[in-house]
Structures are given as C-alpha cells and as structure tokens.
Image (tube, rainbow, N blue to C red):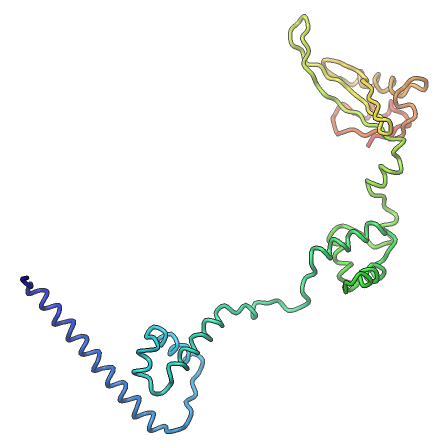
Length: 263
C-alpha cells in the first residue's frame, strides 16, 4: 500500500502535537508537585468561582486522567464539586415565593359551598365549621375567597336572592314566552311562519299564542290582550313572564301584560 507524502506529513504533525501536549502536562504536574510541597499540610481555600472552573474542566477530563495529573486536589473532590454545581443549577428553592402556600382547589370549593348554603354565616363561623371538618383556614383567607367568587359578607348575602332561590319561591307564578319558526307549503309556495308559544312552568302546559308570517307591534299587543284576559287568558294568574331580548317584546307589549312582570 502506497502512502502519500501528505499523509506522512499529517502523521508527523499529529505526533509532534501529541508530544508537545505531553511535555506541557509533565511541566504542569512538576509545577503542581513543587507548589504542593511548598504549601505543605496547609489547606488550600478556593472561592466558589474557582471551584466551578476546576469542576467544569475536571469533568471533561474524567476520573482516570485526573488521577494522573492531580496533586493539589483529589479527583473525588473535583467531581464532588461538579455534582454540587449541577445540583445548584436545578435548585428552585431560591425562586419560591415567601408567604403562606396557596390553599387547594378542594378547600376553596368547600368554602364557597358552605357560604352559599348558609348565607347568614360570617367568616368566623365558616372558619369554625371548616376547623370541625379538619381544615385550618384564617378569616382573611375566607374573605378573599368569597370576594374572588363575587360573594359578599353575610349581612349583604342575606339581602340578595339568587336566581335559584327566586325560581323556587315563585315557581307557581312563572311562565315563559318565545318564538320559533317553521316552513309551511301554501298556495304561494314554501312560506315561513313565526309561532309564538307560552309555557306554564308548574304544569308544563304549552299554549300556542299566535301564528303569523311576520310579527309586528300591533299584533304583539293583541296577543298580550288575549294572554291576560281575566276569564280565559293563559297568563291571567301569572306574575312573572320570562322572555329574551327580542325587539318584539317591546315596552308596549309589556304594558299590555298588565300585572305580569317581564324578566
């Protein structure tokens, strides 16, 4: 096999570089040995930055090479510094916020549940109930939780009625009204009709109040008269009527309902 001159030149250069590096290493080992003897048994104190530099370089070399060249510090010491360096990098204790830990979502939900079921209970009584259940929570924390969820202190919570409570207490007086559309084949072809229906909440009875191609103000007023007729009106005994914000439910329509309140 013929070896090219360029290859021989590279091999000679590589050998010279390797020999030169070995000479440098030997010099550094000799220098370290002399310095170590000069210091004697006195302990060498390094700053953290110095330890960090040695740890990074020593990790790259490995234990075997360190055991051959180290004399001031043992390989175990340098590798221990490196482990400490890694541990410090991933230590998140410095980023932890000072103060009490956040309460769990389960406890927060429990506070809201107790406050809503017992609207006359204040912060201290809620805290006492939670303590009985095995939870320790301050009055201020309870106040912050209730404020976060839009719940006021007990005196104000007693004065306000929730939607669920309103429905329950006025169930017998509630009715609802709304439109839906349907397509009907007529002599003029397929025509869309608007159908106005009313439902009585307690009985679930449904009344078709009217059918028209296009509802308008005067037609709505007549529908209101029919529904509130004192003899046969579907809404004659109702106090509250639920409907959406459709423009057809105008002020005129609401006035024709008389005593019924639109919601």
